[in-house]
Image 1 (cartoon, one colour):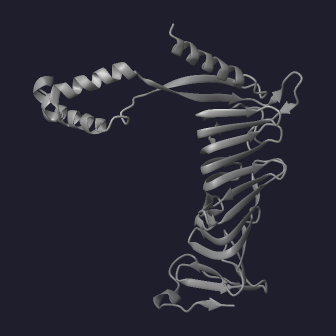
Image 2 (tube, rainbow, N blue to C red; image 1 turned 135 degrees about the vertical axis):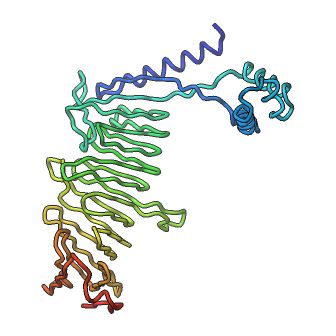
Image 3 (cartoon, rainbow, N blue to C red; image 1 turned 90 degrees about the vertical axis):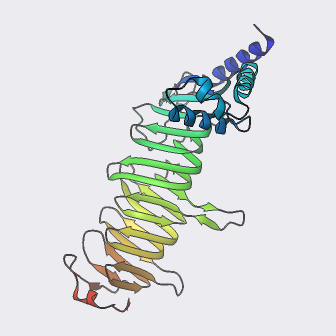
Length: 336
């Protein structure tokens, strides 16, 4: 066995030993994914394309007749590529695959899965690398990190799990599909943070170096399609369903045929009630079909046409079926 192979084996054994120290009774498997190094030498993708194109164009010809002429340099180029591959060999990337379970290890405190997940069922996490910080109970997965249990899944550049608190933080191009009793919520944000003590899922926007938001957090679910600079979802103490939703700054909500814009939104799930407010002189606006309602604060409901303007119990009711006579001409905006 060569010295290089011994060093490689030693590093792999060290990594496996480190992974086995995770106290969540995790089952780990370290796999090697074979990566063909087509991109290390310029022009390999083009050569491959020309060869494939020639093979499809002349399927009945011999390799010498069809493929060699399609490659710049012909047979000599192909021989050089084969020789290079034999010298360098394949490249391997280590991938961490982890199965986590809640429980108690001997001499250790209780370890928990993120509170969003079912504690009695295992969860899986895959990533390119794992940094386990035993003293703090933090498991930090980086590089194409994916955490899932059943149909619930969270993906990001990195996923950090606090096994003591039951929290997690997904950072960098974070995406999630979360299955709750109240329905499925799908999100895309710069980061997705779950705090188990507060039973809150937070979605953050993407900002540039100057702190300016360049991509808002997005959340779609039973409440509608929502965009805002920040979104917080508050779950029931026992988990499983949404009790309230808060959205802040440049809020846009689409619910069925309605579109509402404002600076702050609170959604009460049990009542399917939306309370949206503006900021300063900027009002809230709700548009449905060809009707528009504006005010400092608007309250509306998902299943009815009731709209309360500025909390003064002024209620506008309109029929959803058919076309309103007001739609025959361009209606003026309604301000209250």
